[in-house]
Length: 109
Image (cartoon, rainbow, N blue to C red):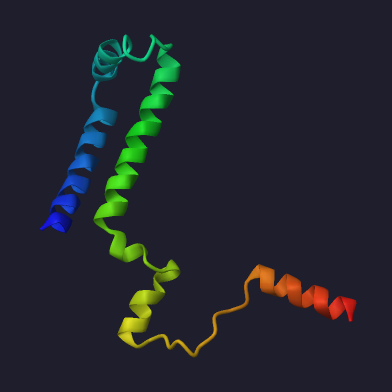
């Protein structure tokens, strides 16, 4: 139930973000004039950057909490293991660190 509520909140946040982005400039100015006394009256450019950072951080946090089951392992390995297309015994290609260590050990010997 909570997961469905978070997912609905995440998608509603897209609508709110799209409305705030695509609406007329008066919406941004009205929020600026309401919040500027609490934020020690920053200039409009600084406020706009601050507003974007906060909006997208909240947006990302809501989506990350709503769909966290998709980010358990990198590159979707979790789903591949469950579907049987990927076996734990199969080794992934070596990382840059492993290649660098192998190069240095071969070069020094």
